[in-house]
Amino acid sequence: MMRRSIARIVLLALIVLSVLNYSVEAPENPNIYYYRLRISLVNKGSSSYTPTLEDRLFLIFPNTSTQKTYIYETDPGVKRFLTDEDGNLFAELDFPEAIEQGGNITATIIIMVNISSRCLPEISVDSSGSLSDIPVWLANYTVSSGAWRYRDEGFKHIADLAAQIKGNDTNILRIISKMVEFIGDRVKYPEGEELRPPQYPNQTLPSTGETGRGDCDDQSALLVTMLRSVGIPSYLQTGGVISSLYSVNGETWDGHLTLVSRGIGWHGWVEAYVPPWGWLPVDITYGYYSNRRDPLSSIKYSASARELMLESEKYSSIDFVEEYLKTEKRIMDSSIFIRMEEEISETLIYNDGSKMVEQHGESMMLLTLPFILAVSVAILIILIRKKSVTLVFRK
Image (cartoon, rainbow, N blue to C red):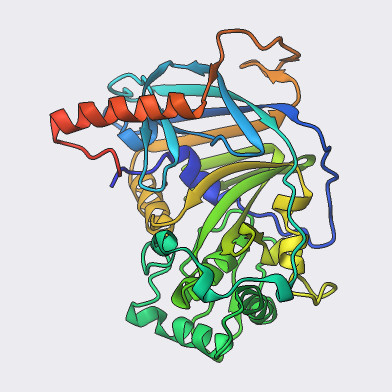
């Protein structure tokens, strides 16, 4: 498996959106935003440090029905593009081979995104399809894998709970509603812990009779585990609500990582397949809470549907918890100290922090589907020839 991008792994610690009664009004028309990520690696050790592939990878936000992504600028330049087993696209930047003792590397990537609001269909339990209506080709979204290994012994109580909640019901939307209500009542949000690591579903809900504890991506991973165990296709989606009201500034990993985030509130939610509508967002920590006792509010009032959202990574088969913990340990055991600053704005943000509205010149790289396919095919050919790495390899 390809090791995950540091930039996206550490941002898993920033998935903190839990504002229950707060809403940012999203404009109806497409909006152009510039996302700027600046990451510095400082070697405080007594010998040189060789950057890993993980250090050099930067996530490229996906093209979807609500956003189109352009690479505006990278420094250093892009060496190649890679995709992981869940289809997330990464740019490998052309880093130097080593960071000398006392030296540092700074990389900047600016991405322009054209974003529009997501429109949801009118839904009702009476109109929902049943389990027998799920297409067979979606079976890979129900497997016991990644962070939701419901067949493992440590997850057995979660699968048993899901089966109990489902009972003999086959109505998908009603099953989802009952599971949302269960998690909403039994799992408490850890307020004030912005830089906490992700956790497995059996950590979020350790046993059948306990009250659990977990933030947005933790509760979403628990729901994915429960849904998959009864045959409902689902995966974890991450993204950020765009608003100047959001900011985070803090340290973690024993001081090895400093995070500064402005203008975006990172969030995680479930995408579940519900015939006849297809994929729908299910958002427990944003859409469903004590003042909204209707479990369908987790869909109707999801952050994905109500806010201007920059979609990020999708997790279907990757064990994102394991990858995060591996990266955390590797960096904490090393001489590398990381400072990561991100900001999103309607104006272009330069390296010195100044802002200026820019015309969208021809130097930008539009990540259209044909381009991605062409890049993927080229990489696949190279890797097949080398036979040393797999293309299908990252909170």
